[in-house]
Amino acid sequence: MNYQVIAFGDSYNDIGMIQEADQGFFFRPPASVTTDFPAIPVTQTYGELKTMLLSLLDA
Image 1 (spheres, one colour):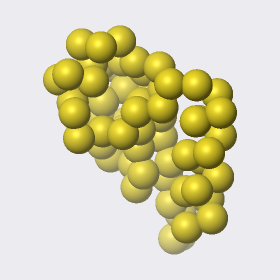
Image 2 (image 1 turned 120 degrees about the vertical axis):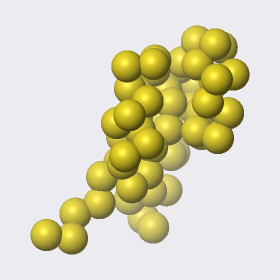
Image 3 (image 1 turned 90 degrees about the vertical axis):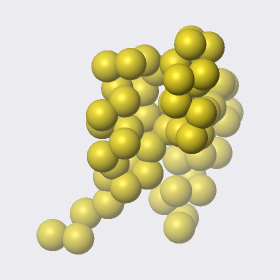
Image 4 (image 1 turned 45 degrees about the vertical axis):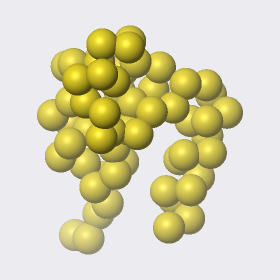
């Protein structure tokens, strides 16, 4: 079907989803999550979230 999946979440329960997506990142996660998963990109504000989503949709 040629779909691309973009996923974002904020905690441990979202790790599997983020890792399985074509593009995944954190949105406002606690420090412990980013420490445990440093390879996953992080956004902290709604402006950063918008920028990340738009950049992925344009790609």
